[in-house]
Image 1 (cartoon, rainbow, N blue to C red):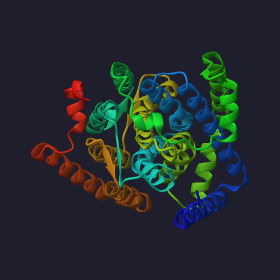
Image 2 (cartoon, rainbow, N blue to C red; image 1 turned 90 degrees about the horizontal axis):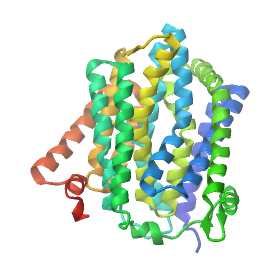
Image 3 (cartoon, rainbow, N blue to C red; image 1 turned 120 degrees about the horizontal axis):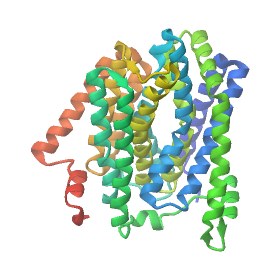
Length: 414
């Protein structure tokens, strides 16, 4: 079947934009920075492959949560390097949260629109002007409430302390247990789209992986774990070896470009280290599994809201040699409130188990606004809260956007 002309034009525009962005970034990073950035991306891709292999041998709900955690592991290494520098250089403490907040904003603001457009324009399946979630995905949406709620508590007390880590870690593992238990209970209710949807051709690397782990027509769990370990260990070793140098390259590039280090670290570092999430989600969307791609992003967001956030005071305390934490300055506090506002708005979009083209354009427009004009964060935050409240009032007064809540309260009605 011949590819439509408008799809070819879209691909050309996309690749041209990416090429220009890479060249511009390369100009400021210089040769060493480009090489180290390539190593970070390569390491992230290896971890992505290792995570995908695990999906072959783990139950779907828990697999997505674990895979999402592995996919954001590059963020842990970069954030650890950032916090380490902040612990020894008080002047750098301002940037300690930059990578964390930037990673959350990229996943929440850019992730869902990316999935929708890839699915809408490049998936071979029949497309509507929305993505519909199967009801069993409700649990992955519902648990986001707890991570958002505790981050709001952190905002109110204007600090992220070591004891917050205990609560955040408990929220994450409690959420994974809840999702796993509910999906196991309703394992017979798998979406037909995920069973019968058309598949695209695997890449050469994926073919080699499948050839190794699949014996006959069954997955050999022993081989799958070996392959996953090799990918994860290699990717992890590269990240350990180059994370700090990567951070230094970003700081030099920010200075050369005349851009705030907080903004530069907040967007460039996550853009590179979040490659696994984007690759896996794009793969799902192109194969027609758009709701699974969305849940993959939601699982990554939950892991970043809880575990990645929890790591910050733990790493800071480790290098300070005493249990402590970070008291936010004005920018850090504003950025956290912006992240919370984005999360609340995105949560309301998913509560009706549907993501429409109108919501996609709105979400992408708001993300581009705060990306292009980072100093307008206060105004953008207010817009997010107004949109959240409008959806919330519709839910309360008109009984709309209640699908997730109803599914959780009355699971037998799935």
